[in-house]
Amino acid sequence: MKIVIVEDDLALAELLCDELEAEGYQTLAFGSAEEADEWLDSHNPELVISDLRLPGQSGLTLLPKVKALPQAPALLLITAFGTVNQAVQALKAGADDFLTKPFDMDHFLLTVKRLLEHRALKTKVEGNGFHGIIGESPVMQRLFKTLGQVAKAEGPVLILGESGTGKELVAKAIHQQSSRRAAPFLAVNCAGIPSELLESEFFGHAAGAYTGASKSRQGLLREADGGTLLLDEIGEMPPALQAKLLRVLQEGTLRPVGSDREVKVNVRILAATHRDLEQLVASGDFRQDLFYRLETFSVRVPPLRERGDDIALLARHFLSLQQQAGKTQAQHISQGAWQQLLNYAFPGNVRELQNAMERAAVFCEQEAISASDLPARLRALDDKGSSELFDSLEQTELPSLSSVQHDYVRYVLAKTQGNKAQAADILGVTRRTLYRWLESS
Image (cartoon, rainbow, N blue to C red; front, side, top):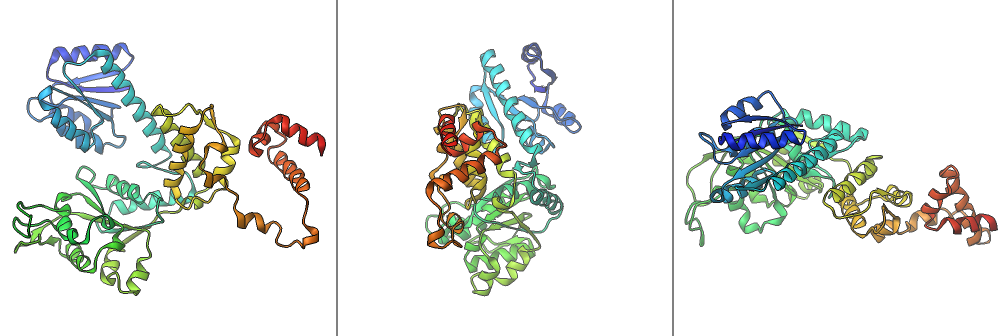
């Protein structure tokens, strides 16, 4: 793995290179952010280690370049005690970690190893997806193609999908694939802000605009200038604010609350909702002209139940995250647990699957996650589905419990191609119990 070191202290740079190369890494050192920035134009290392304070530009200026690379390297900042606050701000902006001088070399090497392992996992995941969205199913491959096309444009995008499908991840992917990737990406939940504060939150305000507004504020639209703003749950936006948003989309200008002058703004608007906006337009709760403007590009995120084998891909990924965090001893998922996961409809979509796997990983006390480790709702029988098996039978034709058990055991054995260990796992019994049932039938 190639590691780039940006450090103007030549003795420290040489020491770090020696220690890293002794661990088997390839290293390359630069004495300034400008030199590293030029090299990164045509190279993609796995890790960049940079001093925060450098001659000329600071190490922090490398962050947008690093994050914009096709396979973004991890970024580790080295900082003196006096610049810790800057390093913390860098973490919020997307840096992966920082170390304070002087640092212990063993701790440094462990930090490097952890960051590289995390990046390797992230790269593996993204190999099965698109900018952090995991999926190999045909519907997701079509979505990835659409996102790549939409990202090249500049118009607004309407992202539709049920709760938990990953609409914000889709918005981030559009931003990362676009020419705006080095500029800010901001997201705001329109349903999570009190209606009386929405206008100020979006458009900003002048000092003295209202009681308590002692200082002027830019607002989200100006904070995202040059970048992308996601308006989540756009259907919850009040009609008065919808009209002002439409003006931003049409004119590229806004007027802060309490101000008498227009301000130009260059921001791409992405809007997401799980609601039926056309129905809201019909009921008069959403402006028709804003709906048509937002619908310049429309993207539908499929629910998990339409994604086939992606359930298994995602389940393994979420288990892997728990393993990486050291929160579970589970190494794999049992056949019985798979049966429950693959038979469940997941009304809460990817978010529900993630929560289920986190819960199962924490409660698992063996090497394999069993069905009993999953949330109760995944283990519950679908009453409608089970009753349909017998709806066509008259009362005198209803089978006995023992005959249903006999038939189902044989069915499971057939499905597992006679593998009694797998069959017992699916049935939730020991192999000894399964053998006893087979002998008595």
